[in-house]
Each structure stands twice: as structure tokens, then as C-alpha cells.
Image 1 (cartoon, rainbow, N blue to C red):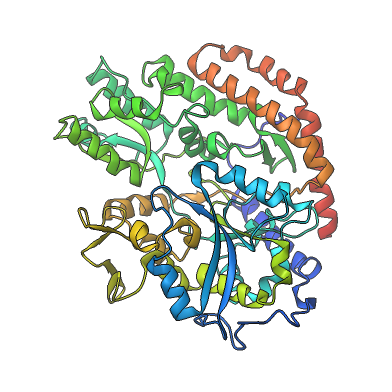
Image 2 (cartoon, one colour):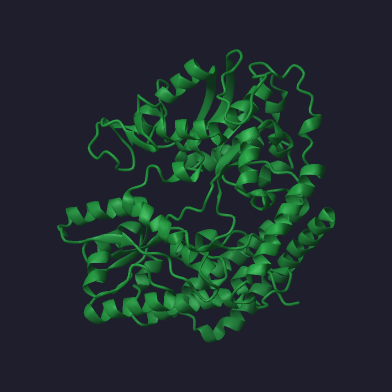
Length: 556
């Protein structure tokens, strides 16, 4: 069957439910066949561990312990040894760290070198699911799925939040997963198009366009009223063209693109097989839509090449009225308006419209950046205490609040269910002008300890401005796209696949831009698809489908 087979524009709800049930069944099966933590001998490895540790138990080491950690040092909050978070973990929980740090600019390269050399500290911070793959075969990192039964908060949230199918996608060919990801209770939208809401109001346009056809009509209305400008001049093209916009639009067109393109595989539910994403009709629909915006003068063709500063200057000086953004960038744009004298400008995030595939948000989007453990961690005398501490800090409600807000009475106050930073501390613009920053001066709200906001819905929303909560709530009516079945490759297959993936992705990126800009006519789409095949798209997809069939056989 051809890997370019067109999938149905809208998955049936029954199909999504069936796939979810399959994910649950897979989770149950792998829990019995792959998770072997119950057989692990902790003799001599229980120093500092609590005897009665359980869900919602505050972790306090039975005797002081020190864990080594590979720490990502962020320029917005450079590491300080006297941070309050580190003092509290020491004084109140009996935990200190031997930190080996690397700067954000060099983080991924240093991480690869340290792990590859076998010199990794016990805890490796800030790792996104999928980044562990290259380290599995060498045995340098621990199959953490073997030990999750000793992490009651983690297992409780996975079960209650129905994340089993998402975790199954992280399993390697051996049936185990190697990253402890941040867990999010609900999808939380961050990216959309920011528009000049004063212009939208002037022209009678909705901030919640029903679909992308209506959004294009809105841009046409803006163009008619302001013929000398491009309504949309976009950004995030420094690495590859308009990666954010492609990513946020793609699920609604039944595909993946931009930041979310991944490994270039797409699950065709009707065909019951994987296809190559960049060659599907759905991917063409997305490209064709964006090409129409350029063709009609609704999107600035420089969007695909300009840097962020250029795009922001155009938006800030009223040379454009729409741009890809998120809730934090909105604050930055308002500052730009003030600097450029655009005092009457107003800005809002629109609800991401629906598309031909439905009103969808990406599937498997509730797993956030997490941590890995080195294989040496399992040999430590404090291994069990480490598992308990990680479970408390990253997965208990108490630990999540501690990492995000700090210490009640010191960094924040509580009135019922409402938290508020003390007036001398700011983060995310909650206390503008405050002399101290929660992250830079105290070490809280730190991506190393917070797992990129993975948390309860209450905590996730607790620091958002009212306008952001309104946007998030509007996006909650979207349906989360179905999670594809797992198709883990073995080591030899991964090596071969990586060679094909890079060449294929480069060709997809290059031609996506060419089609959108009209440099290559869409009448040549079939030729482009054939070029993908010449770059081993079919061989790659055959490899992936073989891995899928093997995984299904293991389930059965």
C-alpha cells in the first residue's frame, strides 16, 4: 500500500476511543511484561529512604543524602549556591546536590558528551522525551519504567490522568521507557496568532474565527482596509521557516509540521499503517492554504526568511497586524508598542481555528521535559531515597507547588485557593517592577526542578494572567488528536533510519517553503512526492511499519 495514501479528513470518534482503549491495553500488558522493578534488590541501597513513603507524603530523608545532578544553567536565572530552594531542600528535606552544570547554549552537546563518556551524574535534568534514544543501547541510562512502582505520585497521576498511552509511545524496543517526563493534567495551549485586537474590533472581526477559511477571510478584510501592508508577517524562521505557525495549524489539517514534525511518520488510522508525513494529501492541504495567503498578499513572503526582530518590528510599528506568538511574547510585543509610540495598539491571542481535519490539538502533548537517571544511580546506597525524592518534587501536588511558587509565607501567600507572590517578588509579570525575581533570586520556577510546568491544572493556570486563562479556556473545547500506536525501532534500525530521516526532512523543509512562496508550483506536488521516494521514504516507512507490527505481536 502506498505510503502517500490519503487519510480521512476527520477521524471518527469511535476510532479515537478504540485507539485510546488500545493504549490502555498496551499499558497494562507492558506493566506485566516489561516493568521488573518488583524484583530489584534494594539491600544496601536504602540510605535516607522513608519507610512509609506514599502518595502525598512529604519527603524528608531519614538521614542526609546528596545526589549528583547534571544541571542546565539558564541565562535568565544563573545558578546560585545560596538560592532559597537549595537551602530549603537541605534544611527541610535532608537533600543536597553535587551539581555539574552546563550553560543552556551548550546544553545538548555537553549532555551527549558526558553521557556518552560514561561520566554522567545520577540525575540528568531537562530532557525531552525522544532525546534519550541515542543513549539507550550503550546502557548509560536507566530504564526508569522498571522502578515507577516505587514512585506512588507518578503512578497515581499517570492512572488518574489517563496518560498510559502517551507513556507507551516513549517505550523503546525493549518495552521500557528511559525518561521520567513532566506530566500535565490537561492540555494547556500556549501558541497561536497574536492579532491587533483594536484593528479586529474596528473591522468587526471575531477573536475566535470558526475555521481557517474564516481566518483567511479576516485577513482579506484587513487587507482591503489597509491595502499597503501585509496583514500577517510571521516569525520563528531562524532554523526552518515559520515552524511555530506550521505546528499550531497542522493538527487541524490532519498532519504534523514545523516544530511538531518529529520523525516524519504519521499514523493513517483508516489504512492501519504509518505513512510519510511530508508526502500526504493532508500535508499538501496545509501547504496549499499558506501558499494562498502569500499569493493573495495576505502574508508577507519575508515571513519564511526574516529573523524574529524584523518580524516584531513590523508588528510593533503597525506594518503588520498578525504574527505567531504565545502568552509571554505578548508582553514583549506590548513593550515594543510602547517603545515605538504605538500607544493605542491592543493585542490578543486568537483561538486557533478548526481545519479540514476538525478542531484539534496535537495528541500526546501532555508530556513535558523531564529527567533521566544514569545507570550508576541504581548502584548508589541512596537509590531508593532518590526515587522517593524525585517522586515527591516532580509529581506530588506539594512538591509541584514548592518548585513553582516557593515557600508559603516567604515567597507567596494564600487566600483560599488563590496564591499571590509577595509584593517584592515578580515572575511572568505578576508583580511588575518588583525588585526580586522568583527564579533568578530564589531558584524557584526553574526548569530544572519544575519539568516545564508539568502539573495539576490548578497549578498550571495559577500564574497566568486573566487574558491568558481566557485564551486557554477557549482552546479547551478543542479535541486532543488520537495518540498513534508505538513503533519502537531497535538499535540497528535507528542508525539506518536516522540517515533517511535527515535527508527526507531537509527535502520536506526546502520544498514546503518553495511551495508556500510560489517558487515551485503546486502542480509539481506529485514530482515532489516521487523525489521523497527517491530519498528512501518508502524504505523508511517500511521499517517503521515493521517495528509497529513487531510491537503489536508483543502485545498479543
